[in-house]
Image 1: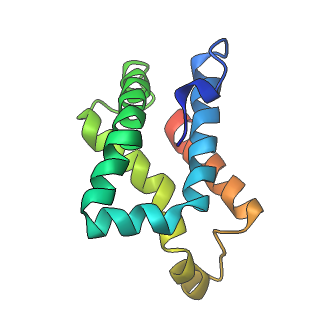
Image 2: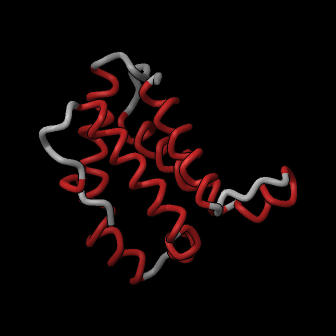
Length: 128
């Protein structure tokens, strides 16, 4: 779980959010299959994950997403759509890592590729 407090509160918004995105990308690379498999399967384990981790993370993410919209970094849109667009952008390459390896010869699971993907997400969301 990525705790919002993992990024120092004294950082400016852009730096704090970039750090949280980077941490989320790293987490997603390390836990890609388990989180997606539980989401697809559903059931008690998913319900537990949502109650214990997802709701708290989404609450923090919604606040950051609202700030992205307020600052004009992303267009005005429903927050759930933006949150899940971020979730998909961050997590999906790691779930599809084998496909990407076969189709593009690119290994998303290598350290440099993980960092490059984190930088990509940050650049797309923060116009850096």
